[in-house]
Image (cartoon, rainbow, N blue to C red):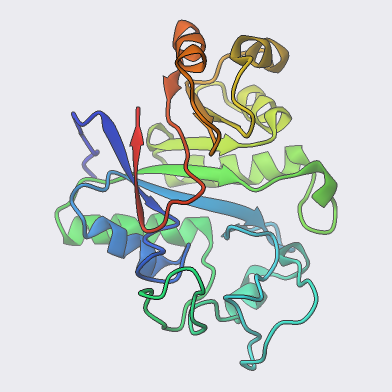
Length: 257
């Protein structure tokens, strides 16, 4: 499998695949994103099922706006993915309902895949299309107040994700990111060679945040808030790449590095 090489100052990422065109965080959306030669990274989110499988999903529950029950009914109440096995999760459809934010998104049957299934499908596609493998930007969707109903404890979450990444065999193509700094610390302790991105909802005070974390991740990713020259200088002084996130992004992303 060949590796993506790019001299561009931007990291073109397929956000949740190509969610502006196909149902988000699904294998068809990831493959559609890769149909654009400029896309060198797939951005996705992961949660953990009841049977400890790493499942690709932005939310740790079935989002009622875009998902429906196996019987085709609307979802009422909160259905935690942590309380369902990966097989049970795959029985729910998350592609036939129109997406309120993306009117051009094609409506088609779509299910939440496992991370391992995404790796396998993308590998096969890249071989068939003679395309370099993309990088993966994987966000662990963890919040302390979600335990234990929606997510496992940090150590379990991290161990399961890292096991899948290492089993795939190309950890050098993966960046793991999280808004929860202690989760990044657990990943770093588990495998210091893995590239990490520090997601920050309140940019600023970068040096103090890294001191509290106990190490300096490779990437600093402020989210939505203004990225000032002072913040950029502070992060770069620590040797961090700057990869800002935009909460309004839709289909594919261009992220400055």
